[in-house]
Amino acid sequence: MEYFPNLPVGEFDQPGAWAKAKEAQGWHGICASDHFFLGDHRYPHVFVTAMAMAGATERVTVTTSFANNLFRSPVEFAQAALALQTFSGGRFEAGLGAGWAAAEMRAMGMAYPDGPKRVSLYVEALQIAAALLRTGQCRFSGEHYRIDIAGDSAIGPTPATPPPLIASAGGPRALREVTPLVDRVELKASARGTRGGALDLATVATVTEDEVKRNVERVKAIDAAKPLGIFLLVAAGEGPEVAALKGLFGNGYLGRFAGHPDDVARALEDLATLGIDRVQLTELAPGSHDALAERLLG
Image (cartoon, rainbow, N blue to C red):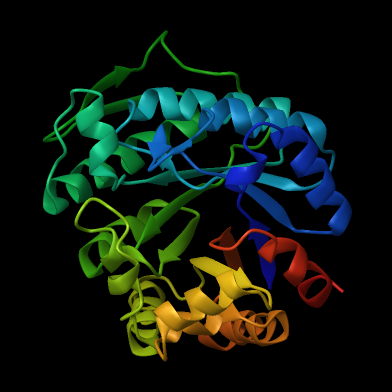
C-alpha cells in the first residue's frame, strides 16, 4: 500500500519545507490541492505548489490532488504536467479532477455547471490531456472542446517518460467513462458530500462500505488491472477535535478513518483487501499525518 499525504492548510506558506520533511519520514508520495479558497483558507496555486515540493525533494512522487478542470483548459493542464514531469526528474503524476466547489466559480464570475455537464466536460478533458501528455499533440472535436494542436504544432517540454494521468471520480457514470482513459483511478469516497457544490460532512458521514466496494467493482469490471486509489479525509489523534469528528461520522464507514491513530492505521491497511493500492490522506485534524507516519511507514 502507498500513502500520499496532502499538503495541510497549516503548511500552505512552506510547501517545500513540508515536502522535504514528508520525504524524510518515508511517505511514498505527496499531494497539493487545487482551490482558490475554501471558507477562510486561501490556497497557493496548485502548479506553483507542486513545483516547490518537487524542487525541495529528490525521491518522493509529487501529484496534484486534483487539478480542477473547471479552472483552466486541459491544454494548460497538460503543459504544466509535462513541465513538472521534466523539472522533477520524472517524479510527477498528473491528477485531474472534475471540480466541485461552486463558490469559487461564482466568485470568478463563471458559471457553475450542473453534475452531468461537469462529468461531460471532465471526460472530454481527460481525452485531450491523455493525448497531449503522450504525444504533445491533439486533434479533438467534442461537445465542449475544440482542440487542433497537430502538424508543426505541439506542446512541451517533452520528458523521457510522460507523467501518468490520474482521474478522481465517485459516481457510476464518471467511473465508467474515465477508467479507460487514464493510468490510475482514485475513488473519491466523499463524492456524495460535494455534489451540491460544497463539502457537506453530514452527507459524507452516510457513505457506506458497500458503496466503496461497488465503486471498486465498477472500475475492476472495466479493467481488472487498473491501479486503484482512494481519497480519504482523516483525523488521527486522541484530542477533543478528533473526538468531535469521530462523533460527527458516528458509525458510518468513513468514521473508521477518524479516531485513535492505531485504529485509523488498521482501517487504512485493511483497504488493501478491497483491491486498493494507494490512499491519499487529507487532514481534517492537524497532526494526523504525523500521528499515522510511524504506524503506516515503519
